[in-house]
Length: 489
Image (cartoon, rainbow, N blue to C red; front, top):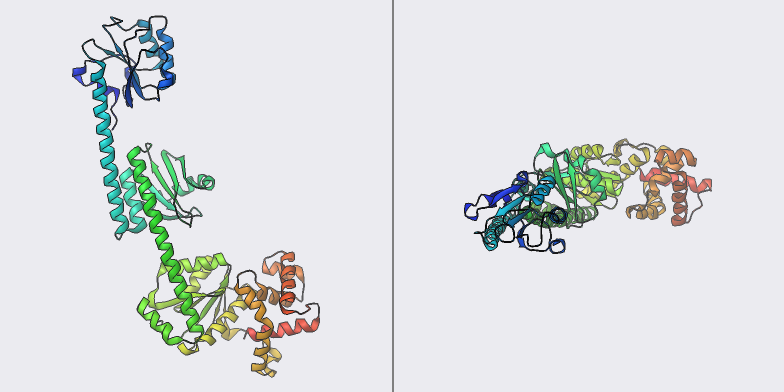
Protein backbone atom coordinates (compact mmCIF):
# COMPACT_ATOMS: atom_id res chain seq x y z
CA UNK A 1 0.00 0.00 0.00
CA UNK A 2 1.39 3.41 -0.99
CA UNK A 3 2.84 5.69 1.70
CA UNK A 4 0.42 8.42 2.76
CA UNK A 5 1.18 11.90 4.09
CA UNK A 6 -0.18 10.78 7.47
CA UNK A 7 2.25 7.83 7.58
CA UNK A 8 5.15 10.14 6.69
CA UNK A 9 4.20 12.57 9.47
CA UNK A 10 4.03 9.62 11.85
CA UNK A 11 7.76 8.95 11.31
CA UNK A 12 8.96 10.88 14.39
CA UNK A 13 12.68 11.20 13.48
CA UNK A 14 11.67 13.46 10.60
CA UNK A 15 9.97 15.93 12.96
CA UNK A 16 7.31 16.99 10.43
CA UNK A 17 4.38 19.13 11.62
CA UNK A 18 1.06 19.63 9.84
CA UNK A 19 0.34 23.31 9.20
CA UNK A 20 -2.62 23.18 6.80
CA UNK A 21 -5.38 20.85 5.46
CA UNK A 22 -4.95 18.05 7.98
CA UNK A 23 -8.03 16.37 6.50
CA UNK A 24 -6.06 15.62 3.32
CA UNK A 25 -3.32 13.56 4.98
CA UNK A 26 -4.78 10.31 3.60
CA UNK A 27 -3.34 11.17 0.18
CA UNK A 28 -0.79 8.72 -1.20
CA UNK A 29 2.69 10.01 -2.06
CA UNK A 30 3.80 9.00 -5.55
CA UNK A 31 7.28 10.55 -5.25
CA UNK A 32 9.22 13.47 -3.74
CA UNK A 33 10.38 16.47 -5.76
CA UNK A 34 12.41 19.37 -4.26
CA UNK A 35 12.26 22.65 -6.19
CA UNK A 36 12.46 26.40 -5.63
CA UNK A 37 10.60 27.26 -8.82
CA UNK A 38 7.51 29.40 -8.33
CA UNK A 39 5.76 27.53 -11.15
CA UNK A 40 6.99 23.90 -11.33
CA UNK A 41 3.89 22.55 -13.14
CA UNK A 42 5.82 21.57 -16.28
CA UNK A 43 8.02 19.23 -14.22
CA UNK A 44 5.28 17.46 -12.29
CA UNK A 45 3.08 14.43 -13.08
CA UNK A 46 0.74 14.64 -10.08
CA UNK A 47 0.81 12.87 -6.74
CA UNK A 48 4.19 14.28 -5.64
CA UNK A 49 5.18 15.65 -2.26
CA UNK A 50 6.83 18.93 -3.25
CA UNK A 51 9.68 20.21 -1.05
CA UNK A 52 10.73 23.88 -0.95
CA UNK A 53 12.46 26.41 1.32
CA UNK A 54 10.30 29.21 -0.16
CA UNK A 55 13.34 31.07 -1.49
CA UNK A 56 11.23 32.97 -4.05
CA UNK A 57 8.04 33.13 -2.00
CA UNK A 58 6.57 35.85 0.22
CA UNK A 59 3.17 36.85 1.56
CA UNK A 60 2.19 38.25 -1.83
CA UNK A 61 3.32 35.45 -4.13
CA UNK A 62 2.38 32.49 -1.90
CA UNK A 63 -1.40 32.31 -2.68
CA UNK A 64 -0.81 32.03 -6.45
CA UNK A 65 1.93 29.48 -5.86
CA UNK A 66 -0.39 27.23 -3.83
CA UNK A 67 -3.12 27.37 -6.47
CA UNK A 68 -0.62 26.37 -9.19
CA UNK A 69 0.36 23.34 -7.10
CA UNK A 70 -3.28 22.34 -6.79
CA UNK A 71 -3.67 22.62 -10.56
CA UNK A 72 -0.61 20.34 -10.96
CA UNK A 73 -2.24 17.71 -8.72
CA UNK A 74 0.50 17.49 -6.07
CA UNK A 75 -0.22 15.42 -2.97
CA UNK A 76 1.18 17.98 -0.54
CA UNK A 77 3.83 20.59 0.18
CA UNK A 78 6.79 20.24 2.54
CA UNK A 79 8.07 23.69 3.55
CA UNK A 80 11.55 23.86 5.06
CA UNK A 81 11.91 26.55 7.74
CA UNK A 82 15.02 28.04 9.28
CA UNK A 83 16.66 28.99 6.00
CA UNK A 84 14.98 31.63 3.82
CA UNK A 85 11.97 31.74 6.18
CA UNK A 86 11.86 31.35 9.93
CA UNK A 87 8.22 30.32 9.59
CA UNK A 88 5.84 29.50 6.77
CA UNK A 89 4.21 32.63 5.25
CA UNK A 90 0.76 33.18 6.74
CA UNK A 91 -0.86 33.71 3.33
CA UNK A 92 0.53 30.36 2.14
CA UNK A 93 -0.98 28.49 5.11
CA UNK A 94 -4.33 30.27 4.79
CA UNK A 95 -4.59 29.60 1.04
CA UNK A 96 -3.56 25.95 1.46
CA UNK A 97 -6.22 25.48 4.13
CA UNK A 98 -8.78 27.10 1.87
CA UNK A 99 -8.03 24.88 -1.17
CA UNK A 100 -7.35 21.71 0.86
CA UNK A 101 -3.64 21.25 0.07
CA UNK A 102 -1.77 19.67 3.03
CA UNK A 103 1.31 21.64 4.12
CA UNK A 104 4.01 20.02 6.27
CA UNK A 105 6.58 22.09 8.13
CA UNK A 106 10.07 20.62 7.76
CA UNK A 107 12.41 21.66 10.62
CA UNK A 108 15.90 22.99 9.93
CA UNK A 109 17.51 19.83 11.35
CA UNK A 110 15.72 17.56 8.84
CA UNK A 111 17.41 17.49 5.42
CA UNK A 112 15.18 17.05 2.42
CA UNK A 113 17.19 13.94 1.48
CA UNK A 114 15.92 12.23 4.63
CA UNK A 115 12.33 12.70 3.45
CA UNK A 116 13.25 11.47 -0.03
CA UNK A 117 14.83 8.33 1.45
CA UNK A 118 11.77 7.63 3.60
CA UNK A 119 9.44 7.91 0.63
CA UNK A 120 11.82 5.91 -1.58
CA UNK A 121 11.90 3.05 0.94
CA UNK A 122 8.12 3.03 1.14
CA UNK A 123 7.72 3.09 -2.67
CA UNK A 124 10.21 0.23 -3.05
CA UNK A 125 8.43 -1.78 -0.37
CA UNK A 126 5.08 -1.10 -2.00
CA UNK A 127 6.38 -2.16 -5.42
CA UNK A 128 7.87 -5.32 -3.94
CA UNK A 129 4.61 -6.16 -2.17
CA UNK A 130 2.75 -5.55 -5.43
CA UNK A 131 5.19 -7.80 -7.29
CA UNK A 132 4.80 -10.57 -4.70
CA UNK A 133 1.02 -10.28 -4.79
CA UNK A 134 1.03 -10.34 -8.58
CA UNK A 135 3.27 -13.39 -8.71
CA UNK A 136 1.24 -15.25 -6.11
CA UNK A 137 -2.01 -14.41 -7.88
CA UNK A 138 -0.64 -15.55 -11.24
CA UNK A 139 0.53 -18.84 -9.72
CA UNK A 140 -2.86 -19.50 -8.12
CA UNK A 141 -4.72 -18.73 -11.33
CA UNK A 142 -2.39 -20.93 -13.37
CA UNK A 143 -2.74 -23.86 -10.97
CA UNK A 144 -6.51 -23.48 -11.15
CA UNK A 145 -6.51 -23.28 -14.96
CA UNK A 146 -4.42 -26.43 -15.46
CA UNK A 147 -6.27 -28.32 -12.71
CA UNK A 148 -9.84 -29.55 -12.70
CA UNK A 149 -11.38 -26.13 -12.08
CA UNK A 150 -11.42 -25.08 -15.73
CA UNK A 151 -12.75 -21.64 -16.76
CA UNK A 152 -15.27 -21.66 -13.90
CA UNK A 153 -12.51 -22.24 -11.37
CA UNK A 154 -10.44 -19.39 -12.83
CA UNK A 155 -13.44 -17.05 -12.58
CA UNK A 156 -14.07 -17.93 -8.93
CA UNK A 157 -10.37 -17.69 -8.02
CA UNK A 158 -10.05 -14.28 -9.72
CA UNK A 159 -13.01 -12.95 -7.73
CA UNK A 160 -11.25 -13.88 -4.47
CA UNK A 161 -7.93 -12.38 -5.56
CA UNK A 162 -9.44 -8.98 -6.42
CA UNK A 163 -12.09 -9.08 -3.66
CA UNK A 164 -14.93 -8.55 -6.09
CA UNK A 165 -17.20 -10.39 -8.52
CA UNK A 166 -16.43 -11.83 -11.94
CA UNK A 167 -18.57 -12.85 -14.93
CA UNK A 168 -17.51 -14.63 -18.12
CA UNK A 169 -19.82 -13.61 -20.96
CA UNK A 170 -20.22 -15.00 -24.47
CA UNK A 171 -20.60 -12.98 -27.67
CA UNK A 172 -24.31 -12.42 -27.02
CA UNK A 173 -23.72 -11.17 -23.47
CA UNK A 174 -25.07 -14.35 -21.87
CA UNK A 175 -23.31 -15.56 -18.71
CA UNK A 176 -21.24 -18.70 -19.25
CA UNK A 177 -19.44 -18.62 -15.88
CA UNK A 178 -20.01 -16.60 -12.71
CA UNK A 179 -18.07 -16.28 -9.46
CA UNK A 180 -21.39 -16.88 -7.68
CA UNK A 181 -25.04 -17.20 -8.66
CA UNK A 182 -25.90 -13.92 -6.92
CA UNK A 183 -23.76 -11.79 -9.30
CA UNK A 184 -25.38 -13.01 -12.54
CA UNK A 185 -27.79 -10.02 -12.65
CA UNK A 186 -24.81 -7.69 -13.16
CA UNK A 187 -24.74 -8.98 -16.76
CA UNK A 188 -27.91 -6.97 -17.43
CA UNK A 189 -26.36 -3.88 -15.83
CA UNK A 190 -23.43 -3.86 -18.28
CA UNK A 191 -25.29 -5.05 -21.40
CA UNK A 192 -25.36 -1.61 -23.04
CA UNK A 193 -21.64 -1.18 -22.41
CA UNK A 194 -20.98 -4.59 -23.97
CA UNK A 195 -22.68 -3.42 -27.14
CA UNK A 196 -20.16 -0.55 -27.38
CA UNK A 197 -17.13 -2.75 -26.70
CA UNK A 198 -15.48 -4.06 -29.85
CA UNK A 199 -12.05 -5.03 -28.51
CA UNK A 200 -9.75 -4.17 -25.62
CA UNK A 201 -10.91 -2.74 -22.29
CA UNK A 202 -13.82 -0.60 -21.15
CA UNK A 203 -14.31 0.73 -17.61
CA UNK A 204 -17.87 1.37 -16.46
CA UNK A 205 -19.97 1.46 -13.28
CA UNK A 206 -22.67 -0.92 -12.03
CA UNK A 207 -24.33 -0.04 -8.71
CA UNK A 208 -21.48 0.66 -6.25
CA UNK A 209 -18.91 -1.26 -8.29
CA UNK A 210 -16.33 -0.13 -10.80
CA UNK A 211 -16.47 -2.70 -13.61
CA UNK A 212 -13.69 -3.58 -16.02
CA UNK A 213 -14.88 -5.20 -19.26
CA UNK A 214 -12.03 -6.97 -21.05
CA UNK A 215 -12.43 -8.83 -24.34
CA UNK A 216 -10.84 -12.27 -24.58
CA UNK A 217 -8.33 -13.10 -27.27
CA UNK A 218 -10.41 -15.81 -28.94
CA UNK A 219 -12.04 -16.26 -32.32
CA UNK A 220 -15.37 -16.70 -30.56
CA UNK A 221 -15.74 -13.24 -29.00
CA UNK A 222 -16.08 -13.33 -25.21
CA UNK A 223 -15.79 -10.76 -22.43
CA UNK A 224 -14.53 -10.93 -18.85
CA UNK A 225 -16.35 -8.58 -16.46
CA UNK A 226 -14.66 -7.77 -13.14
CA UNK A 227 -16.45 -5.66 -10.52
CA UNK A 228 -14.71 -4.16 -7.46
CA UNK A 229 -15.74 -1.54 -4.92
CA UNK A 230 -12.41 0.28 -5.31
CA UNK A 231 -10.42 0.79 -8.53
CA UNK A 232 -7.89 -1.98 -9.13
CA UNK A 233 -4.29 -1.20 -8.26
CA UNK A 234 -1.37 -2.26 -10.48
CA UNK A 235 -1.21 -5.75 -8.96
CA UNK A 236 -4.94 -6.25 -9.44
CA UNK A 237 -4.70 -5.16 -13.06
CA UNK A 238 -1.83 -7.60 -13.71
CA UNK A 239 -3.83 -10.41 -12.10
CA UNK A 240 -6.87 -9.64 -14.27
CA UNK A 241 -4.67 -9.61 -17.39
CA UNK A 242 -3.31 -13.02 -16.40
CA UNK A 243 -6.84 -14.36 -16.00
CA UNK A 244 -7.77 -13.00 -19.44
CA UNK A 245 -4.81 -14.81 -21.02
CA UNK A 246 -5.54 -18.09 -19.24
CA UNK A 247 -9.25 -17.97 -20.05
CA UNK A 248 -8.55 -17.10 -23.69
CA UNK A 249 -6.22 -20.08 -24.01
CA UNK A 250 -8.57 -22.46 -22.20
CA UNK A 251 -11.64 -21.42 -24.19
CA UNK A 252 -9.80 -21.58 -27.49
CA UNK A 253 -8.49 -25.05 -26.69
CA UNK A 254 -11.96 -26.13 -25.62
CA UNK A 255 -13.43 -24.70 -28.81
CA UNK A 256 -10.93 -26.66 -30.90
CA UNK A 257 -11.67 -29.81 -28.93
CA UNK A 258 -15.43 -29.40 -29.30
CA UNK A 259 -15.05 -28.64 -33.00
CA UNK A 260 -12.94 -31.76 -33.56
CA UNK A 261 -15.44 -33.89 -31.66
CA UNK A 262 -18.32 -32.54 -33.73
CA UNK A 263 -16.48 -33.25 -36.97
CA UNK A 264 -15.87 -36.78 -35.71
CA UNK A 265 -19.58 -37.24 -34.95
CA UNK A 266 -20.48 -36.02 -38.43
CA UNK A 267 -17.95 -38.43 -39.90
CA UNK A 268 -19.53 -41.31 -37.98
CA UNK A 269 -22.94 -40.29 -39.31
CA UNK A 270 -21.52 -40.44 -42.81
CA UNK A 271 -20.08 -43.92 -42.10
CA UNK A 272 -23.46 -45.15 -40.84
CA UNK A 273 -25.23 -43.63 -43.83
CA UNK A 274 -22.76 -45.36 -46.14
CA UNK A 275 -23.49 -48.70 -44.50
CA UNK A 276 -20.13 -49.06 -42.71
CA UNK A 277 -21.86 -49.92 -39.44
CA UNK A 278 -19.09 -52.03 -37.93
CA UNK A 279 -16.41 -49.31 -38.07
CA UNK A 280 -18.83 -46.63 -36.86
CA UNK A 281 -20.09 -48.61 -33.87
CA UNK A 282 -16.58 -49.74 -32.94
CA UNK A 283 -15.47 -46.09 -32.86
CA UNK A 284 -18.48 -45.12 -30.74
CA UNK A 285 -17.63 -47.80 -28.19
CA UNK A 286 -14.00 -46.72 -27.94
CA UNK A 287 -14.89 -43.03 -27.49
CA UNK A 288 -18.10 -43.12 -25.46
CA UNK A 289 -18.01 -46.57 -23.89
CA UNK A 290 -21.01 -47.96 -25.73
CA UNK A 291 -23.56 -47.73 -28.52
CA UNK A 292 -27.28 -46.89 -28.16
CA UNK A 293 -29.27 -50.08 -27.98
CA UNK A 294 -30.89 -51.29 -31.23
CA UNK A 295 -33.37 -51.15 -32.85
CA UNK A 296 -32.76 -47.49 -33.54
CA UNK A 297 -35.38 -44.82 -34.05
CA UNK A 298 -33.57 -42.23 -36.11
CA UNK A 299 -34.39 -38.56 -35.49
CA UNK A 300 -33.49 -35.88 -38.04
CA UNK A 301 -33.86 -32.21 -37.06
CA UNK A 302 -34.04 -29.41 -39.64
CA UNK A 303 -33.89 -25.67 -39.09
CA UNK A 304 -31.65 -22.64 -39.48
CA UNK A 305 -27.90 -22.96 -39.04
CA UNK A 306 -28.05 -21.00 -35.78
CA UNK A 307 -30.87 -23.08 -34.33
CA UNK A 308 -29.11 -26.34 -35.24
CA UNK A 309 -25.91 -25.06 -33.66
CA UNK A 310 -27.80 -24.23 -30.45
CA UNK A 311 -29.21 -27.76 -30.39
CA UNK A 312 -25.76 -29.32 -30.77
CA UNK A 313 -24.41 -27.02 -28.02
CA UNK A 314 -27.20 -28.14 -25.70
CA UNK A 315 -26.59 -31.81 -26.48
CA UNK A 316 -22.85 -31.37 -25.89
CA UNK A 317 -23.63 -29.87 -22.48
CA UNK A 318 -25.83 -32.82 -21.52
CA UNK A 319 -23.13 -35.37 -22.47
CA UNK A 320 -25.58 -38.25 -22.75
CA UNK A 321 -22.81 -40.82 -23.36
CA UNK A 322 -23.98 -44.14 -24.81
CA UNK A 323 -27.67 -43.30 -24.24
CA UNK A 324 -27.87 -41.15 -27.36
CA UNK A 325 -25.60 -40.55 -30.32
CA UNK A 326 -25.93 -37.36 -32.33
CA UNK A 327 -24.12 -35.74 -35.20
CA UNK A 328 -24.68 -33.57 -38.25
CA UNK A 329 -25.59 -34.84 -41.69
CA UNK A 330 -25.85 -32.08 -44.26
CA UNK A 331 -28.53 -29.63 -43.16
CA UNK A 332 -29.80 -31.92 -40.39
CA UNK A 333 -28.89 -32.81 -36.83
CA UNK A 334 -29.25 -36.58 -36.60
CA UNK A 335 -29.74 -38.58 -33.41
CA UNK A 336 -30.41 -42.19 -32.49
CA UNK A 337 -31.01 -43.96 -29.21
CA UNK A 338 -32.68 -41.79 -26.57
CA UNK A 339 -34.16 -39.45 -29.18
CA UNK A 340 -36.72 -38.06 -26.71
CA UNK A 341 -33.87 -36.11 -25.07
CA UNK A 342 -33.01 -34.54 -28.42
CA UNK A 343 -36.65 -33.80 -29.23
CA UNK A 344 -37.11 -32.03 -25.87
CA UNK A 345 -34.04 -29.88 -26.44
CA UNK A 346 -35.21 -29.02 -29.97
CA UNK A 347 -38.65 -27.95 -28.74
CA UNK A 348 -37.09 -25.70 -26.06
CA UNK A 349 -34.85 -23.98 -28.60
CA UNK A 350 -37.59 -23.38 -31.14
CA UNK A 351 -37.36 -22.94 -34.91
CA UNK A 352 -36.49 -26.62 -35.34
CA UNK A 353 -38.47 -29.34 -37.10
CA UNK A 354 -37.94 -33.01 -36.32
CA UNK A 355 -38.73 -36.18 -38.24
CA UNK A 356 -38.74 -39.64 -36.63
CA UNK A 357 -38.15 -42.85 -38.55
CA UNK A 358 -39.58 -46.30 -37.98
CA UNK A 359 -37.39 -48.47 -35.72
CA UNK A 360 -34.55 -49.95 -37.80
CA UNK A 361 -31.68 -52.36 -37.20
CA UNK A 362 -28.14 -51.04 -37.11
CA UNK A 363 -27.46 -52.22 -40.66
CA UNK A 364 -30.67 -50.52 -41.87
CA UNK A 365 -29.60 -47.11 -40.56
CA UNK A 366 -29.41 -45.64 -44.12
CA UNK A 367 -33.10 -46.38 -44.63
CA UNK A 368 -33.97 -44.98 -41.21
CA UNK A 369 -31.98 -41.82 -41.91
CA UNK A 370 -33.79 -41.33 -45.17
CA UNK A 371 -37.18 -41.75 -43.49
CA UNK A 372 -36.21 -39.30 -40.72
CA UNK A 373 -35.06 -36.64 -43.17
CA UNK A 374 -38.22 -36.95 -45.23
CA UNK A 375 -40.35 -36.64 -42.10
CA UNK A 376 -38.32 -33.61 -40.99
CA UNK A 377 -38.89 -31.92 -44.36
CA UNK A 378 -42.61 -32.56 -43.94
CA UNK A 379 -42.48 -31.14 -40.41
CA UNK A 380 -40.81 -28.00 -41.70
CA UNK A 381 -43.39 -27.60 -44.45
CA UNK A 382 -46.21 -28.05 -41.93
CA UNK A 383 -44.49 -25.91 -39.29
CA UNK A 384 -44.80 -28.90 -36.97
CA UNK A 385 -42.27 -29.66 -34.22
CA UNK A 386 -42.32 -33.41 -34.94
CA UNK A 387 -43.60 -35.65 -37.72
CA UNK A 388 -43.37 -39.45 -37.50
CA UNK A 389 -42.60 -41.21 -40.74
CA UNK A 390 -45.15 -43.94 -39.99
CA UNK A 391 -47.93 -41.36 -39.68
CA UNK A 392 -46.93 -39.33 -42.69
CA UNK A 393 -49.95 -39.40 -45.02
CA UNK A 394 -50.70 -38.24 -48.51
CA UNK A 395 -50.30 -41.35 -50.64
CA UNK A 396 -53.62 -41.28 -52.58
CA UNK A 397 -53.15 -42.64 -56.07
CA UNK A 398 -49.46 -43.23 -55.39
CA UNK A 399 -50.44 -46.70 -54.23
CA UNK A 400 -51.08 -47.53 -57.91
CA UNK A 401 -47.61 -46.45 -58.98
CA UNK A 402 -44.63 -48.80 -58.88
CA UNK A 403 -42.75 -47.72 -55.71
CA UNK A 404 -39.29 -48.15 -57.20
CA UNK A 405 -40.13 -46.24 -60.33
CA UNK A 406 -41.83 -43.50 -58.35
CA UNK A 407 -38.86 -43.21 -55.98
CA UNK A 408 -36.38 -43.05 -58.83
CA UNK A 409 -38.46 -40.32 -60.48
CA UNK A 410 -38.70 -38.33 -57.24
CA UNK A 411 -35.01 -38.65 -56.44
CA UNK A 412 -34.02 -37.52 -59.93
CA UNK A 413 -36.35 -34.52 -59.94
CA UNK A 414 -35.65 -33.31 -56.42
CA UNK A 415 -31.90 -34.07 -56.24
CA UNK A 416 -30.77 -30.55 -57.35
CA UNK A 417 -33.04 -28.95 -54.75
CA UNK A 418 -31.82 -31.20 -51.94
CA UNK A 419 -28.19 -30.57 -52.85
CA UNK A 420 -28.85 -26.83 -52.78
CA UNK A 421 -30.62 -27.05 -49.39
CA UNK A 422 -27.78 -29.04 -47.88
CA UNK A 423 -25.44 -26.11 -48.48
CA UNK A 424 -27.57 -24.08 -46.07
CA UNK A 425 -28.25 -21.39 -48.69
CA UNK A 426 -31.99 -21.87 -48.87
CA UNK A 427 -35.05 -23.98 -48.16
CA UNK A 428 -36.18 -24.88 -51.66
CA UNK A 429 -37.85 -28.24 -50.94
CA UNK A 430 -39.91 -26.90 -48.02
CA UNK A 431 -40.79 -23.73 -49.92
CA UNK A 432 -41.87 -25.66 -53.04
CA UNK A 433 -44.03 -27.99 -50.92
CA UNK A 434 -45.78 -25.12 -49.17
CA UNK A 435 -46.29 -23.20 -52.43
CA UNK A 436 -47.91 -26.20 -54.11
CA UNK A 437 -50.04 -26.91 -51.03
CA UNK A 438 -51.44 -23.38 -51.40
CA UNK A 439 -52.04 -23.83 -55.16
CA UNK A 440 -49.37 -21.31 -56.10
CA UNK A 441 -50.87 -18.51 -53.99
CA UNK A 442 -47.88 -16.32 -53.16
CA UNK A 443 -49.30 -14.41 -50.18
CA UNK A 444 -50.75 -17.43 -48.40
CA UNK A 445 -47.66 -19.59 -48.94
CA UNK A 446 -45.20 -16.87 -47.91
CA UNK A 447 -47.22 -16.16 -44.77
CA UNK A 448 -47.19 -19.85 -43.87
CA UNK A 449 -43.43 -20.01 -44.41
CA UNK A 450 -42.83 -16.77 -42.52
CA UNK A 451 -40.97 -15.10 -45.39
CA UNK A 452 -41.68 -12.19 -47.72
CA UNK A 453 -43.48 -13.08 -50.94
CA UNK A 454 -40.52 -11.73 -52.96
CA UNK A 455 -38.28 -14.21 -51.11
CA UNK A 456 -40.64 -17.02 -52.04
CA UNK A 457 -40.71 -15.89 -55.69
CA UNK A 458 -36.89 -15.90 -55.73
CA UNK A 459 -36.89 -19.44 -54.34
CA UNK A 460 -39.32 -20.67 -56.98
CA UNK A 461 -37.20 -19.06 -59.69
CA UNK A 462 -34.24 -20.96 -58.23
CA UNK A 463 -36.26 -24.23 -58.36
CA UNK A 464 -37.01 -23.63 -62.05
CA UNK A 465 -33.37 -22.77 -62.74
CA UNK A 466 -31.96 -25.86 -60.99
CA UNK A 467 -34.46 -28.33 -62.49
CA UNK A 468 -34.95 -26.75 -65.91
CA UNK A 469 -38.74 -26.92 -65.56
CA UNK A 470 -41.42 -24.29 -65.98
CA UNK A 471 -43.48 -23.98 -62.79
CA UNK A 472 -46.22 -22.14 -64.67
CA UNK A 473 -47.10 -25.44 -66.34
CA UNK A 474 -49.83 -27.43 -64.51
CA UNK A 475 -48.19 -30.66 -65.60
CA UNK A 476 -44.85 -29.66 -64.12
CA UNK A 477 -46.56 -28.69 -60.86
CA UNK A 478 -48.26 -32.12 -60.79
CA UNK A 479 -44.91 -33.84 -61.33
CA UNK A 480 -43.32 -31.91 -58.48
CA UNK A 481 -46.26 -32.67 -56.20
CA UNK A 482 -45.97 -36.38 -57.04
CA UNK A 483 -42.23 -36.34 -56.35
CA UNK A 484 -42.68 -34.57 -53.04
CA UNK A 485 -45.35 -37.03 -51.90
CA UNK A 486 -43.15 -40.01 -52.85
CA UNK A 487 -40.21 -38.49 -51.01
CA UNK A 488 -42.35 -37.81 -47.97
CA UNK A 489 -43.06 -41.50 -47.64
